[in-house]
Length: 418
Image (tube, rainbow, N blue to C red; front, side, top):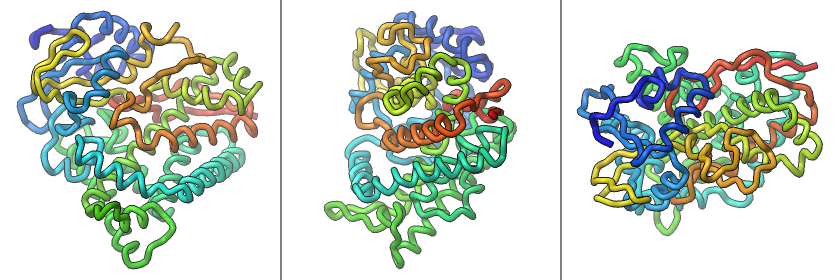
């Protein structure tokens, strides 16, 4: 494949036209592109930062995504993981978290953060998740049919993460607004269509979130509380501590990734259980026995995070394909999760699927999602509450999808019950 390769809009992963298509059209395109040898190469398009940009290889096969994930020394995250374009310094100030680092810096931050999640704190999180899910369903029943995203799926992860960090309820609206802006993609509901205005909005949102947690950390240094900000602010692991900038960028990662991915998995879950009544009946017949596998299948089928980027550090060969130093590759988790070579009848939603080696939380490797356990817990908790107490809840009407190549989002989804 050469840099001069051209693609029709139906197959051009760099164009907004592709991401505005229906899910069925998207998955059909993945099937076509997965069959190509070597993986397809796409031009990146015009950089919003005015820099000259290289194109990228799209890794759409499960084996390629897994192979690159297991070789971080060759497929690096340090040049950026969440943008096709190389980010300027001012963006990395807020968005250069551990997700865009290699070892040893990545290992250092992950070690400090992981130690802050003590068994006591994890137990408290789990209790809080179930309690919060119950309160949200109480309020749903009181409100009646409504926008499920606004009233349920957006609220649960927001409340859990803010409570976990020790952030007061008076900040929830700001956190949700800034999260929506940062992961807005090209969707005009959340971000300006004017490029310069949009970039300013994203930088402002990141700065707001960073300032919120930095200020809170200063308070916690003087007066620690039983929350994650306190644990992270005072954590000292073998003489290592998080700097204020590292704490701020971790919070931006946690609140953005934890909010959006879990929220969209929950939104899609309601849609899937409405569209597949047989699977819904199967789950209701043995809720506790099947809730775990059902969550895994929802995450596989939906793939809330569509891709992550890596940059090749030296000439290398993987799965008989030669890559050159500085090549960009995008690991398309969403396409890998429909790979016919790994999943039998991959376009079928099957809550009993086993085995289910999906990469919805990333592929095994140093960057496997740190919050996977919490996300699974949140999705399970809200589905348990809904299907126990509102067993006839269903999606009403068509979902309003987010226009984004990065997040498989639902902005609005009406629900009905009773």
